[in-house]
Length: 305
Ligand code: FUB
Image 1: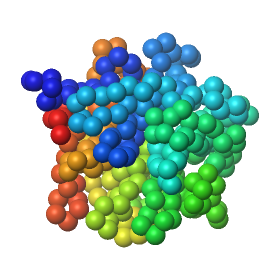
Image 2: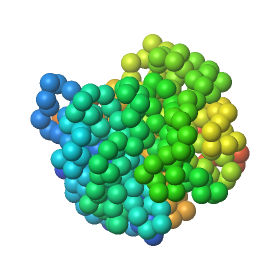
Image 3: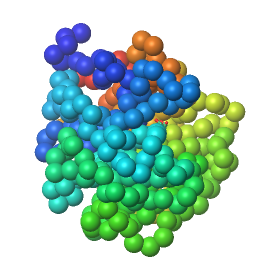
Image 4: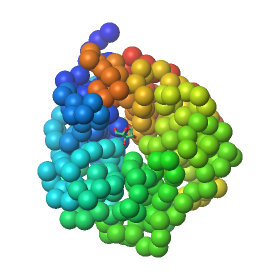
């Protein structure tokens, strides 16, 4: 294969990356990821910082390095987990789950003038319900200007962000975890919904892509649900990617870029790969005419655009 025209998975081959979150801005695709350290502490996820990479052709990637880290968040001490970034009014907001010094997970926000950071912490959590559900934020600004931040494991919850993107109005809302919404499955709610939601709208359909558990299977697959409004009711759509990647987790990020649709995910396929040493990959896919998506196979890589 011609390396100028095809990029083989995993996208980053020098470090372990996970939890991909793409953002298209000004003809460039920025990819935010977590970073699995080589050396584990307590044989668990050892993750201290967030990384950013960007490309204008899906083949040549610029490494922007560490763009935000636990050292920048005075009130956090561990677990730099799955982020997502969005632009509003010329500023960039990076939503990040972290473990608080006084216990429990919460969602931090880093703010920057540039997509590649560096990001500066708000100084306090944005979402902090005092339980462990506050992980894996996904953010979307609807056509009417209302921004939504969904998150959660094992429950899917959301807040309506204010225009400043660093505060919200109203309560934390809980999505009913029904079989109609997320199919019967093996996670705590009795549905397949596990974690890692990815929320967006395309051609008038709202999508919730997520990491999912089938009954009796101890490895995540990816699945999706759709809704006619930003807040539901959600209807299960099907399996997006089956449990092939060789590691317990998977985590979706979806983007349209230069006329192509991409699903970013992670596997354990770099040498030394493991549950705690993951690597981000990408697959191109097409939507069906009615907006549904067929199961996407893991793949060797993608062509230049
Ligand atoms: O990477 C740490 C956690 O594992 C993420 O927050 C989850 O989505 C899963 O990928």
